[in-house]
Amino acid sequence: MDAITLLKNDHREVERLFKRFERAGDRALATKREIADRVVEGLSRHAAIEEQLFYPVARSTVPNSDDIVLESLEEHHVVKWLLSELDGMDPAEERFDAKMTVLIESVRHHVKEEEQEFFPKVRKELGRAALDDLGEALEAAKKTAPTHPHPRSPDTPPGNMSAATATAMVDRIGDTVSGVAQGSVSVVQDLVAMILGKKRRAPAPTGSSVSRSTAHKVRSGATTLADDAVDGVVGAKRAVATTTSREVQRARRTAAAGARAARRTGEEAREGATRTARTARSGVKATAKTARSPRGGVKATAKTARTPVKSRPRKTSASKATARKRSTQRS
Image (cartoon, rainbow, N blue to C red):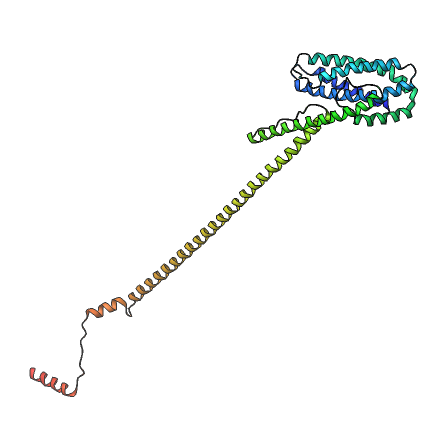
C-alpha cells in the first residue's frame, strides 16, 4: 500500500466515526465516549506518522511545499489540543459535544486541503515506487505511534522522533494500566452478577485500543477461571445426582425383584393348596362311593351291627338222639 492510500484510508475511518457521532442521540453518552476514544487514538497515530515521516519527505521533495506543510502542522497542533481536552472528558459535560463539533469541522477542513491540493503534488513528485516504500515505513511507524495527543511535544524532526518514542512508551504503559483497572472492575461486576444470578453486563471498556484489548483480556481470563470453577461445581452436582439416581434405581430393582419373588411364592402356595384341596375332595368322593357299594361299606356294616349274630352249634349224634326223644315225648 502506498503512502497516500494509507493516509486516505485513515481519513475515511475517522470520517465514519464522525458520522456515527453525529447520528448518536443526546442520551447516547456511552456511545459518544466510545467514538471519542477511537477518534483520539486514530488521529493521534495519524498525526504522529505524518509529522515523523510524510511531511519531512514531502517538504524535501515537493517544490514550494513549505507553506502547506507548516499550515498542516498548525492545524495538527489545534486538533491535538482539542483531542487532549476530549481525552477522558465526561460526555455528560455540556462542552463535550461542542468540542467534538469543532474537532470534526477542523479535521474535515484539513483533510479536504490535503487530499485536493497536497497529495496530488506529492504523488506527482515521488512516483509509485517511492510512495510504496514510504507507505511501508508509515505502516510500521503507525504500530508504535503514540495513542494519545501530546500538543506540547515537538512536531518536526529531529525532536519529534525521540519525543514520539518516549511518548508512545508512556502511552502504552498508561493504556495497559487503564486496561487492567477496567478489566478488574469488570471482573468484580461479573462476580457479583454470578452470585446474584443476574446476567453479566456487556463489556464496554474505554480508552485506546491497547486499553480496551487489555481490559478484555483481563476480564476474559477471570471469566474463564470463574466458568471453570462453576463447571466444576456443576460437574460435582451431576456426579452426585447420577450416583444417587443409580442407588435409587438399584433399590427399585431390588424391591421389584422381592415383589416378584413374593408373588411367585404366593402363587406356588395357592397352587399347592388347590392341589391339596382337590386331592382331599377326591378322597372323600372315593370313600363315599365305597360306602354306598352293596359289597360292604357303611350300610352293610350298619345292618350287620343291628342284627344279633346267632351261633348254631354243630349237631352231634347224641344231640340228634336227644332231640328225637323230646319230639316223641311231646307227641
